[in-house]
Image (cartoon, rainbow, N blue to C red):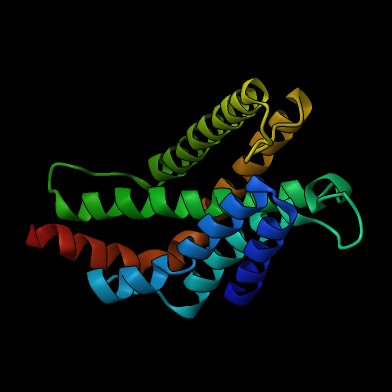
Length: 197
């Protein structure tokens, strides 16, 4: 995936498309995040977690480039692409919210988070982040229009925004129900790190 992202960077430079360059560049940098967390902060990042994070950013960056030989991006030509990327990205955001909340709970005796509360917390965390993301897309699109540039992130209208928020919620539900079992080691390592500080 990293090699493909480097290729996407070159495609963006060749086309003079700032959106492709920024999205592929940021995605490429994020692919190094799991190794950095494990090496520098001793947070266990197994192959599954690494693949989860990398796939989310990879599919987003790939979606901005599109189908070779056409002007259509995957986001525009494949109706389900945006939904898949939002659900996957939201599941990563949900995992981060869950991990940090559980680590704080383990670190601090004064914090107790019941299972039902965690389910609601993860959903609210994901929805709030999703709303922030949509506002950011809108602001970047508006700024790009004012400056006469291409938008790095694109908002396709109210229906698209609502669909994005629904699939963000789907990603949060998936983590709330099944994903938390895969994050126990990460929670423990983060709590240990908090205890040392």
